[in-house]
Image (cartoon, rainbow, N blue to C red):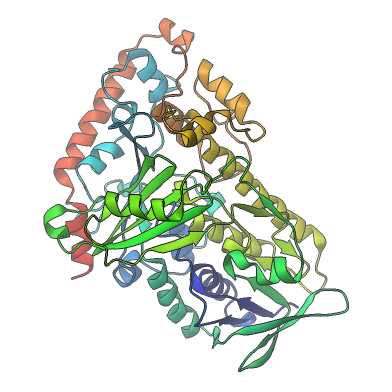
Length: 514
């Protein structure tokens, strides 16, 4: 039996892994987490996917328990600003497209819609809620889409059948702190110490990690959560890292935490904002009491000093007292994330730039797949192979989806954006872009393996960025549009009704924190 797991590294990845293992296996597995108090965590993952609720439900945590402890707030989608042209924006929501007579409302919008109104406002409810800064929950705690509410129990990402309408923003360091208590209360052995050496046995497998004050820590399975360093997977086991920078060149970020003491007056945006800039893009993530902000860029086109200056002018003019955090990002994935008796999770496994908030998603997917493929003393290589294939498929799919953002964006006004149009494409994306000029993608023409993004996401980004079909589907000209027009009108009425009924995002979040 495999009954001893040692996790090297804390932060979000380490404590999500430790907590999940304890929730899954209880006392049947001994879990030790060792982390240094001299190594700062990156703190990625302040914005998430809606599927993160599977993680919290698996742990038996209600959002009313952890959100106030983590400065948590709601995320209904991502607002993309200036990606098509200055002053233009659109939303990528957590909302599937409605249909009429077998075609999506996006198809019908191309045929019958008011083209003076943006696609997203015509085809989704969420943009109206975002513009009005609405909470997805009423003050009594009920969800506006009541049929989607309730615990998912012990389910995983790939089991999601209905699209939940929101995700979360939270302080990643506070979430790690919250999960530290959750994990240690359930038996995780927590050691604060420096790892000085990683030992290997005669097979080349990891035998122990040596610590400065606590001696050798032995285990059967080791989880590498040491961030971009990859202390176990890369430095010890020499697993090759495959860079994505040939297609995703952004390799640096600078971040600022900006206090928001006037949220009761200014309100709180229930969405992440991604604003296109000359050499990358700036994020804005509203938390309770502060905003998280950062500039993601390529150092081929922008210096760290210029990036910090641009970010400060954009999000916090006059606040030179705020400390900037400069981050070097390793973009890509390990050839394998499970090697011998070591599994890398989080930044030590892989990372793509945070444009679609995939950092926490990758951690969650990695730990879910580890539990699904957990080994015994035989160390069946087929389990590790399945794990590595699934992790690789997710990473490669997200890579392709992110490259779409840059290739399809209409901006060509700086050297950075001009190069985005000529850069090489991942396999399959050129064909998808060509299909998108003929007709909208569907569930068979998007990237096929599970990668977290559905048909509506691919359609939303293509139409929002301006990569539209040259004409509507010819078949629609032969179908009576009465039902489609009624559905488009019904969607607008539903949106207006919800805007009138729902409280503001700030009002609801403040009630959780009172």
